[in-house]
Image (cartoon, rainbow, N blue to C red; front, side, top):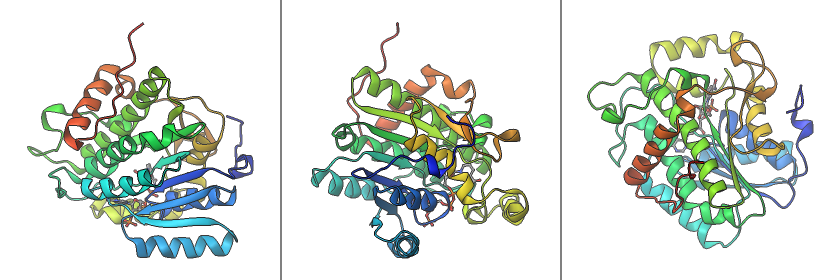
Length: 309
Ligand SMILES: NC(=O)c1ccc[n+]([C@@H]2O[C@H](COP(=O)([O-])OP(=O)(O)OC[C@H]3O[C@@H](n4cnc5c(N)ncnc54)[C@H](OP(=O)(O)O)[C@@H]3O)[C@@H](O)[C@H]2O)c1
């Protein structure tokens, strides 16, 4: 990654079709705008289509001629994920870029219609199902890329296979850390599996550092509220936070790369390759999580693990 990478470096995206989850707000919105500015056709996948439409309106005023479309996707509802993917699959057009960005952070414990803990459901399982259902559309592109958004907070995370849904005890930050660790395990495992299968689909991961978005205020906990108050003073802008995501999506980084900001503690700065925790690189855990995620979502990829050399 070139030092000081900015959106100026994004190559022409004309002819590419991108899909950004959670594109009505925060980082996803910036990513949608910059991809559209570079010429991509962008689908904004949002749980509230009204909010998606207003993002489309805003972006269109700044990027005249932008090719944008809002579609409804609730990642916390496998039925919605299935409907969304079915429509795309039926269109017989490839998807070149999938940005698995949407997320929730540290809400009080909630259970989704499918019976999953909300953060695991939204941040990991919904994206796992979505990517699996779109694999055919991705593989039909000349060189597809999947970017999954994680966080520095993955470092405190642990996959608790004995209580994945935090039924016995719920800690909102532990569940967030688990879901963000799951994002990385998934991103790396997907890359190994598509490579082993010879698919033209690379998978990479990125995190924004600490960026001023709706994430902190949206969660509702005391610490998150404090973070929201601190946002204007300590967080970088959403535009800066989106840079590692955009770099992961459009630069020449290889599959399995993980990008974040280059500043102290990876909290702010320009994109660079960053390290993932040892837990995020644990292939045994990644394979187990993959199997469990297939079981829970009912979405099977038909991709075996990479053979051990
Ligand atoms: N901001 C940071 O400092 C930071 C740090 C590390 C990682 N991240 C990660 O960055 C990603 C984007 O977050 P952000 O900071 O841009 O926060 P944000 O402004 O709150 O955006 C989150 C987006 O996800 C959407 N979303 C939430 N639940 C959804 C669901 N069930 N189905 C579909 N979409 C859903 C939200 O939709 P609504 O508007 O309808 O709620 C919103 O569009 C997240 O994965 C987050 O974990 C952010």
